[in-house]
Image 1 (tube, helix red, strand yellow):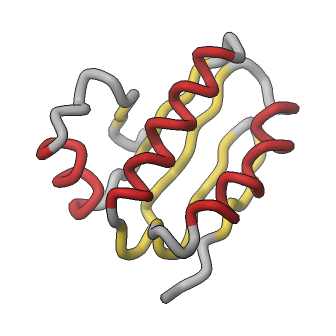
Image 2 (cartoon, rainbow, N blue to C red):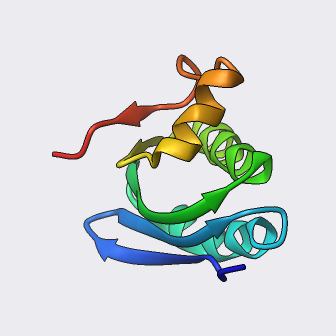
Length: 103
């Protein structure tokens, strides 16, 4: 198991590093609360360094999306790893999650 971290990258960009699993997601949710709340209205979360993912990791992306909508903010996920993308597709969440290619 790898500990997950949320890293600020400036200009309301964040990166997730580590596994997105039942063991790591609760701490990652807590790490995100303050920086996301104080960020501008548009956030980008880069998942290129995310490791292994399970349904808890997918649930975290859904929770962040819901939080953003409730907070009148916009969030997008870039560089989605293949494993997470497979979970998104199997659960038919492509239209719910704001996925974007890296620029």
